[in-house]
Length: 571
View 1 (cartoon, one colour):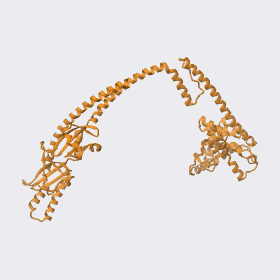
View 2: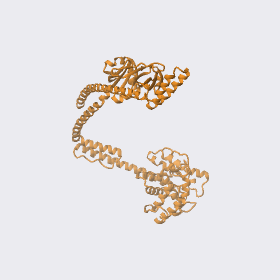
View 3: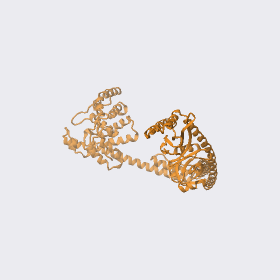
View 4: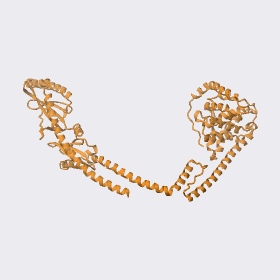
């Protein structure tokens, strides 16, 4: 109802404003017509004064006088030379005045030579007929257009030797000047043809000969669907100059003001209705709305650990809330049990793998624990640490597909056997790819043997192409392997292992991860995972500084190695 009433009010205001603006535009054009008419008379006087001033040029007068005296004494070539001399002087005068047409005639009124911007539109060896309007302004109609005209005699010792003609074209430049003064569009027509106009191109095309014939009698014309008020400024024979003002453009300002006022009233009206509606909704529907928002937020955040609080204002809604909380508690319990089952299965897989070789017993668990410590040292988020924990547990799961003869061989491996071992990252990823829960851990399993210098396997990734979690597991896996006993060698100390890692930092191992591992070893939380006990904090830090300096050339060489980027296979 409010919208209907406001629409009716706005329609009435629009109609009233349009009528008032139409009348105001007509009055403004009439006032502008009088002002421009007076201005044209003043410009005509200025044009005559300018012509009289230019006619005082002594060099030009002497050249014309010489031509008059000697025109009958020489040949045709001599006569043309004298006219050329007059043209040179005339060009000098025209260059200083920047006029459209500047011409010199002889005593009989025949044009001898012409200069100026529009000199080509002025006849030579002919007389120029001019007409004078009621206001005293002279105009000349040429095939190329209409010119405002003024002339002044050229005299030498009070004897007339010729005439200086000064003309200004009624062209697009002149139309633009009138538009600037009147604030309206200008249309200059001759007969049924448009000579110049400041109207837009699409409106200029709408000015037909039929419209030009009807224009003087119609104060309001329609151009391309827009109403224009029209007034004739002045006329010279067939040449006419009109001022046209857009009624729609003049109406736009008041209409916008009326629209803003109506819009303000509408906003206030709807605001009052909105306040009343909100009050009613708050009184009746607030408990249901609160419950709905709580459920939506819980669904978005996937946080089912915090129960929905009862409203206390509606028994039915509070009963529904209690039932929902009970249901979500059951779902959370089931989710926790499922998560525990997943983690237990993963740990069982890791233990089953470690059980195949007594020398690697506990390896996956140690790598997982130390990887999380390194990741925490590097500032990884908790969800990233959880992915790192399980991915490190499963990093060697692909070795299930490697035969015991190769996996537990006490001596060195042959190249063929080593190729079989190198297949375990790809095999592990292939095994886990069928478990959606483990998709996030696939990059660790598949890429934990990639190296920063691109010499790793299976994809020969380098630098930042290797996922950060895989880089961490790669360093920790190597550390645990060095500090663990094997059938073919005894375990080495933590210090020796760190020295070995720093020795190959930047080429075989990620520098930042090695640095974080060294820092993690020096912390109390990391100490229980090592076979020979943690090194003291101060020596660890000192060794880290020395190792960083020693590894610097290696790091620089690795950083300048450029290879085409490879895309990690999708899970």
